[in-house]
Length: 356
Ligand code: GDD
Ligand code: MG
Image 1: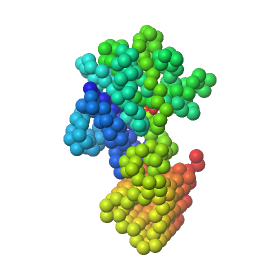
Image 2: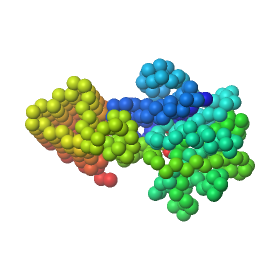
Image 3: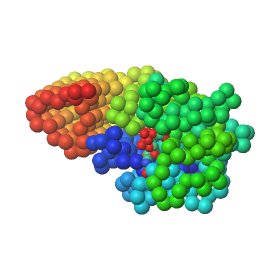
Image 4: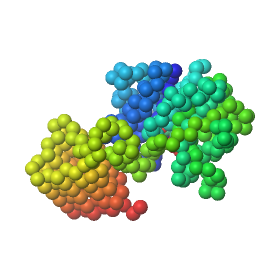
């Protein structure tokens, strides 16, 4: 069985971080995000191939995963000539497939038992099975109503506040029968959420909901991307590298150098080759990428810093995110949800605060 990961979006809500790093490979504790999905998919023995459906910066993604040999599963790539939307992308990637497929939105992190979903799909002889999850505010998602027998009754993408009738949304994980794809137009942009799923409801097809109440998050905004790090550090979501370690663990990679009198408070993650100089403080919920330098008496607090950062003396970075190769000058204060793109340089004594 093939699993198709939809990973062609531009990641606009995660800009500027996604200008040079497409969303499927933004780092989460030094690992490209899609690794977490591939880990999940690999748990289902029947799935023997992962197809990455790409459009935006495909080469960068291919460079990370190659043919999958290192991950122990075959990985192949389908690159659309132009963005075809979620429906068009599935149609384009599946070509002449006839076997049941699993589809994932390439930006969701979850611990769902995929094998169970496939079993339900088969048991109910469904044409489509969709995973639902409850959220507080469905307006940023696809609202899905289902009945007591688990049949999907309504699919409404990005509902207006007055249209919200329940709390279950599309979790972006599907099991689908390609025989139904004749209703997705070929080589034209289309949305599986706005046309294909509603059409299954309209035609009374066997369209089943699987409600999942465990961990689920879409990492598509800076707040959610930061949240997933906290959740892994808090072990609300058991995943590498905090899954097997006690609460409050400080994860220090290879060749990390911490000078005397520097303070490191867990939970936190400092990746390979990073140097924390004398008197510097790395406070809880900080994530510092490879080969960075935190200079004397600087403070990193609850922030995510991508590789090759330099935080100069006496600077403070609090509750913020910095892309690769950022240079923060002396005595700078960055706080309150600032997001800086790759190679940003902040002049000594500057003060940046997001007005969120
Ligand atoms: N190949 C390809 N081509 N992939 C695409 C394209 C495209 O044109 N457009 C989007 N994608 C991929 C994105 O990379 C992402 O992984 C996935 O499809 C979903 O797109 P998003 O842009 O992240 O959609 P969303 O988060 O607003 O809404 C979707 O996900 C929600 C759950 O997180 C919908 O499926 C909602 O119904 C759902 O609730
Ligand atoms: Mg999304």
